[in-house]
Length: 282
Image 1 (cartoon, rainbow, N blue to C red):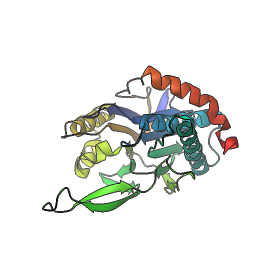
Image 2 (image 1 turned 180 degrees about the vertical axis):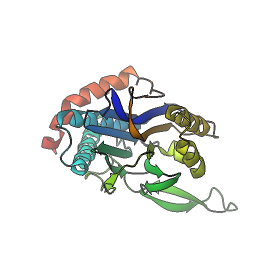
Image 3 (image 1 turned 90 degrees about the horizontal axis):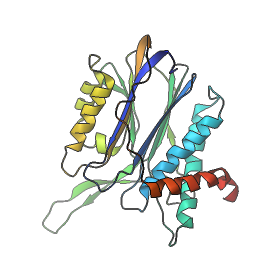
């Protein structure tokens, strides 16, 4: 699918925003038959959210490389990715002294034979944009609470997650979307709440539906707008535009993510050694 004649354009990008570090992670993997796209947003307020997010990416990549393609059951594959990543995150937390509970959201998409499949946990989103409108969208796993800072202040709604990877012994219940045949001009967008929470929905639609604008430029503009917001969060997004006919050329990856820090790389290398044994030890 990503050879000399491709059926899609793709772009991804990430920015740290007004946070001390970037806890978002993403992946984009392609074989001749199958694409795997994923995004994870490590939860702030919990230690080592960046490790939890990286583990979702690492586990998914390892499983994808081990599987024959096309995947016989994309939905089951994504559920297994989430389950094994959750176990790896829990194992990492138990090995710390004192123990910690890293957590992350997850959204995954598989595209093969012209059909898109997706699964998610938390409030990182997937949009399928068609003809300038949202054709399909994930529903956040959140609940609304009303809070106020003082007795005189009016209560304000605040969303809190009801599902994530990590934190609880059992893997989270994962929501899967219906298998959806892609049409020429369709755009898939996977993004963390740092993007969808800061950029108006109509701006997202208008920007990504403009066929005259290169996809990497459109996505970069949206990420820049989200980053300019006051007290901006980490902002990460991946976009894929399904083309009318195959065209020559490679994948335009657009913006690239900065490398993780050496300490995190060391932790991930160690964790990768135990991922294959996680299921047997739980």
